[in-house]
Amino acid sequence: MNTDKFQLMIVEEDNEFIQIWKDYFSKRYKTHFIKNNSNLRIDNKHNAIVFNANLNITLINKYKNNIIFIIINTKAEANKGKFKIFGNKIFVERPINLYKLEKKILEALKASVFQENEKIKVKNFYLFPFEKKITCFYQKISIKLTEKEVSMLIELNKTKNTLSRIKLLEKVWGYNSSIKTATVETHIHRLRKKLCVFYKPKLEIKTDKDGYIII
Image (cartoon, rainbow, N blue to C red):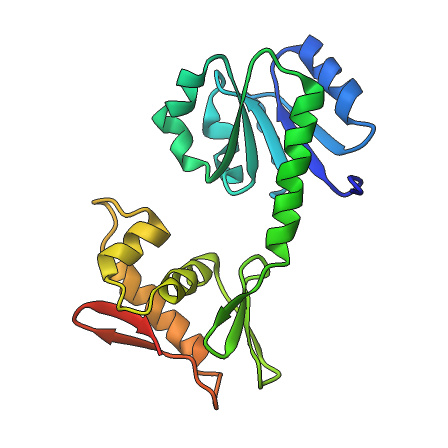
């Protein structure tokens, strides 16, 4: 696999470790090193981020949708609630074998590349999650979607039955008491307006007392 375009961000405090990581990874990857207390802002296009579980996670909150490799001392650390915010996380236990870590990174990259090319059939349409768009088999029309709109369509497409507002909140927003159910109605309304562009066939989201369903 060509790794030239693969970007890696390493959050590390120890200069000695930084040099070791740099010597190993920088020849094959676009590698960025950043200290935990840095105010440096880096774009959100990194394919993978490696950071020490003992460091403050605030810095990389904005990168939580990337592939995150979390360096831990013991397996017990992997159960800490603070890591729940990271969707695509992989725990790596010390002592670190850089060769094995690179193997894990490449495996994750391959999976990511596969997902980027993935398309999901929704009725007479194709949904491209990583491109955030939906197209029709029979019309030369493509609609751009937001991340939440993609997630809603994926969840609605998984079931042949009506999906309740609460279930949709749980699946898409990780529902908690601070989120109002009006959030769903607002996003569904915006998504319906976008889907109105399609005609013969149409793609519609029906609402009833039990929730939502794609028809």
